[in-house]
Length: 135
Image (cartoon, rainbow, N blue to C red; front, side):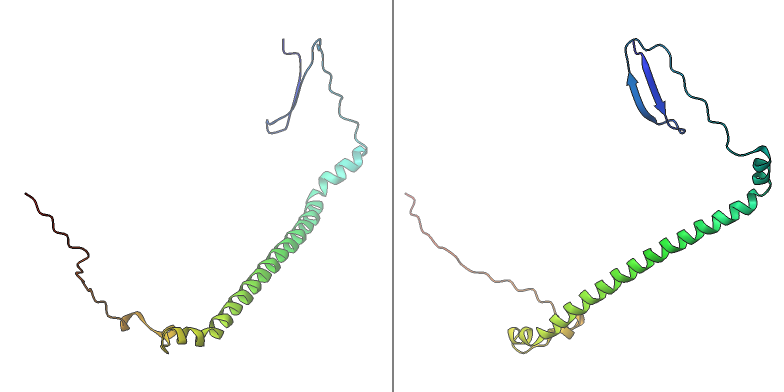
């Protein structure tokens, strides 16, 4: 037998399963009595729009604060990226003379693709000659 109990969430997700032998009855405690008087409950029901506007304003403030934090984080990441790019551009500029020296004085940083001319060159080279006498 599968004696025991399951606890489910409001949307049908199984939260807890407990199997127990000789388990025959499970009694859930009733909801506690409301601490508000009937008059107070009626007043809250009548003024629900006022209360909801107050809490919606608080939610909006929290949302604005969170979006401000996200914007600040993105700004910080962008500034960090720009610093990194500037550092590499500075290094590239500092190594320009060394690149020119390696290219026999040619400044190839500013070259465009249309300045080049493609040539196809075929070279025939004889690698080995062997003679074999067949009798």
